[in-house]
Length: 202
Image (cartoon, rainbow, N blue to C red; front, side, top):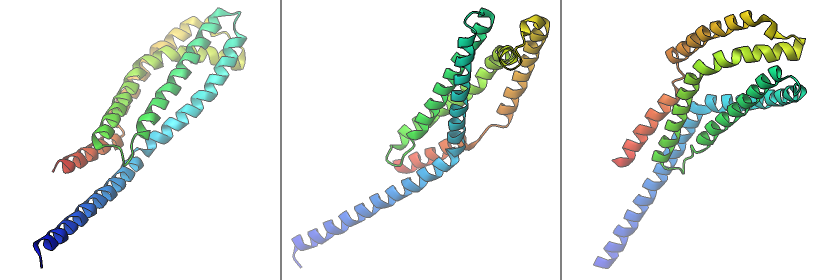
């Protein structure tokens, strides 16, 4: 057999092997990403639920706020809850956007970057409870009492202050429990992605 024939056979074999390796890597990445999506599905569904609830609450609060244009003591709490609802929707949409970047065709390092941002958002969300619970618990009570019972809780200012003080303790307990028993799916996913990235380097 001539040298050029041997060379052609070798190249064909080499190309076939390279193609097989690429296919195997592609299949491995597809399986890995599907596993990651399964791990992160609770975050995805929770975000969808939060968006739906926040939209419904936003419509309710817009209606309430417009009905209180002449009473500033109820208008301000209403506006605060409108802002809070918008913030909640935007925050959840950002999480869904980051999750949408988890695809087989996306480079592993870019997927890691997106999920690290998601983890930071989850940490920030827990920390913000220290502020949101004490700040909004009296606001929710004021708006709820007025909207459903036509009751002015400003007449019970001492009770409101006591409720606000109690909500500080409640916030501390909730954040402690969330930190003590965190959702480890995201951590497992990041660890798994790190393993994939190390394998790709080899």
